[in-house]
Image (tube, rainbow over all chains, first blue to last red; front, side):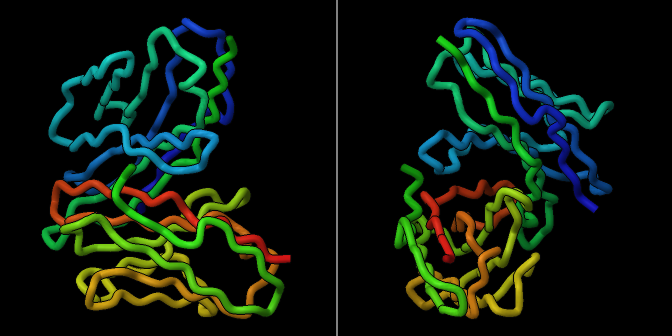
Length: 117
Length: 113
């Protein structure tokens, strides 16, 4: 069965600090996809990144970076030099690959990030 | 803007009532998913449709039903509403391929009084 664990319920940092959000997943499939979504106070879910299980290369996009390690079943998300606009709930999610299309997303409980000015 | 639209944005109703939530997927997306976000259950998958056919079912109550129409828009029907049905209901759409990404609409916030 699929499972995603985000052990950090809430994190509070001061602006310009770096922060890492942890995500640990469980799956029996060898081919799967991992995602991060952001939910700002306005409520919508914004897609940030998709990573497939065969690509362990870390990715950087501006102040955001992601570290995928299959050995520890983790897909952590780091925000460098955090800003107030980064305040949101961040969700990690997992989907398993099928020939007919991937399975629906299984989400973690989310981590609420508060960036204080 | 994800390109997925949902109406209404807010809905307030009473216990025992029935409501319909509407979703229009992104242009070109054939698959629609419905998710429920509540404080106690988090984000949970309810049901998926692909090109008009039900593709997968999650933790959807028997009081809830959905359908996808020929123009690919989808409706989620919630009946005999209970206080516990109060939640944020999201619709997402995707192309449905092995590398697809689900893009979410803004959600419908349902309050049952």
